[in-house]
Image (cartoon, rainbow, N blue to C red; front, top):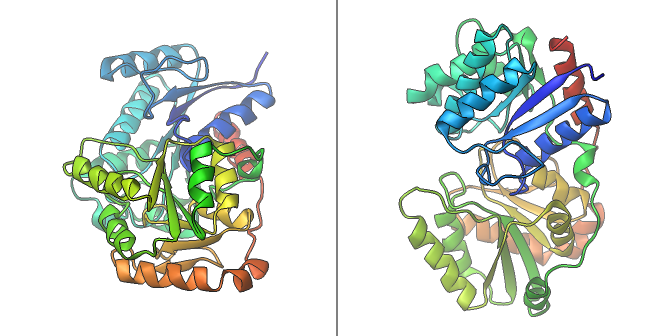
Length: 359
C-alpha cells in the first residue's frame, strides 16, 4: 500500500511551460516512490479529458472535485503565482476546503520578484487573497532566498521557518531526446543566416509591443521563431496577433504551435539565440535549458538572470536590438566559454519537504 496520496493542483502540459513540466516531474517522482499522485489540471487544456490528469469543467466542478479528493484522503499541493487574479483565488478555494476537512495544504509559489501582485507593495486588490494563500499553507516552496524574504514580509502570521527556497530548475528538465524538427521549421531556418527562438504568450508581462518594435529593425537574414503563443481575453490581443502574422507573411517570423519538451529543447539547441522577454519569471527554466544546451541567451533584465545571460531593458526595443546584434556578432567567440549551470535534483528535494509535512 502507498504511504501518501497527493493531489497536485495547477497547470499540466500542454503547453510545456517550466511550471507545468515541473508539476509533471513531481507527479512522476511520487509515483516512482510508490505513492498515489494525481494532477488537477487548471491549465489551458483543463476541460479536455485525459488519463494524464483530472479535468476541470468549471467552478462548481472544481469545488466538487476538491472535496471528493479530500474525502478520499488526498493531501493538497497547490501551485500559484501572483501574475494573475484567477490562480490565487482558485488556490485559496483549495486551501479552505483542505482546512475544512482538517488538513492544511502545501503551496509552491512560482515566478520571480517582479510579478503583477507581488511583492507586497504591488499587491493592490489581491493582497488579502495572496496573503491568505501564504498564511494557510503548512509549507511554502519558492525559488530563492530573496523571494522567501518577500513572502515572509507579505503580512502577519507568515513564519519564515515554513518557507523553503528551492530552485525551480532540476536535472529532469535536461532529460530529453533530440528529435527531428518540423519541416516548416527546418525550411525557415535554412533560409536564414541566424536563428532566434523565443517563447511568448499574448498577455501582459511578455512585452509584445517591445518585441514588435524590435522585429521592425531586425535584419532580414535573421529569422525569429516564436512558440507558445496563446490568446487570452485581454483587449488588444487580436491586433498584436495580426501584427505577428504580418511579420510571418513577410517571412521574417515563423509562428509555431506549442512544442513538447523534446521538440522545444531540440529547437533551442538548433538556435543561435534564445530571447526571453518577461520580467516576472525570475531565473526561468527555459533560460537555464538554453544555457545547458549551449545556446546564447538574451533576456529582459529582472535582477535574477544567471551568469552568461546578456540582458536588456524590458521596455526598450533599441536596447533589445543592440544586445541581440552584439550577441550575434560575436557568437563564435562566446559559445566556447558559455556558462553551463550546475543542475541538481530539486524535484526530489521538494518531494521530501512535502512528504515531511504530510506525515
